[in-house]
Length: 244
Image (cartoon, rainbow, N blue to C red):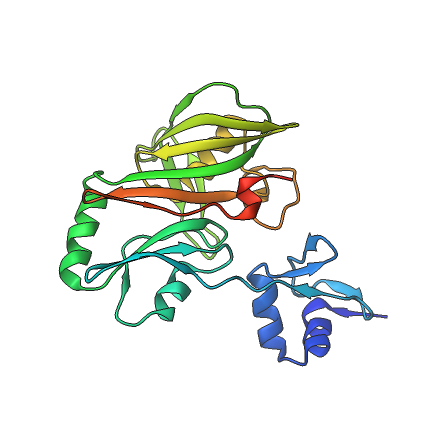
């Protein structure tokens, strides 16, 4: 016999159907090594699920103006903001992206920091595992147009797109996967993911932008930010340190 996945999960964990759907929608539920993506998918009643809850953010730096965190994957930036009192997000990271996240502790600093982002004075660095072998530096200068919605998607669009520049540097190769270091000169929605896909090297696990590899998450990490004369570095999680 079969039933909808979220109902089986709710019964297995003794939680509400709504909570079970939320866990599945957040990408936290697995069957074996495969992530469960559709809450209403029909599955055998004896299916055994595994829920992997995200870790709590760790503090990289804190003073009277700023709180710098190493955000784990699978935490929404707004959920992180809600975990701490009297802070406001300066910028955001995609839910599956780990790494440096900046929060302001007062409105004066928030305004100053946002101006730095707006004026492109902030240096943003990432590390990712990508499909294929990357053996030379690449500069990607392709305009991006984003279609907003429940699940936003970005496209290269010469007419409607806004300027977007990504610098790619090879770091390591394992089989047919490459570890690359990235710097983005702009901050368009899904910029790194789309640009890497555009050159035939989508981020591992990024099925939305063409990765054929099943992974627990999109293997993208915000490694470093330089802002207002200071540099903040987020140590790489295990899945970024080594692909396998």
